[in-house]
Image (cartoon, rainbow, N blue to C red; front, side):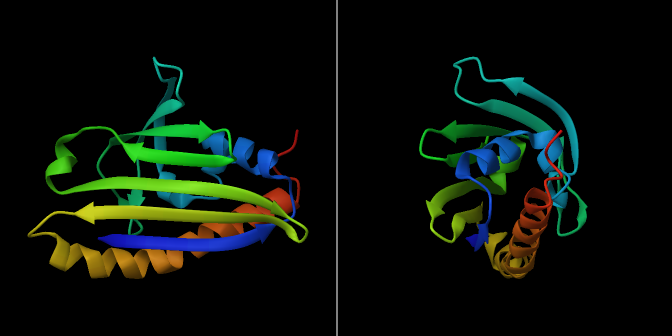
Length: 153
């Protein structure tokens, strides 16, 4: 398994941060991993959205994919891959959580790539190194963007 997690304090309310992340076209400005967004559609069951995009993985264009992004009532966002041909290689999940504190909102971001054998031995170390750098950079970008008010009209 390739897993990366980072935490940062952002001086904005949790709801504002979650709103920003859920606006995927806007959030793309701070997260290069989103790559090119092709479409965002409401889920038929009313639980979140489906985003179809071409991610940037390890700084390179990745295969077109669709993920489900769901906002939970506890200022948490859960992200999962939808069934696709890439499931033969790996599955994906991720989350954001936002917790208000006296110092600001603690934001935790995690991504999990569960590579299947025989790919795991090659991709796990590579992705772990990438995620250890990419997730803190993403959160630092989000912090700077939000605290500067760049997301506000």
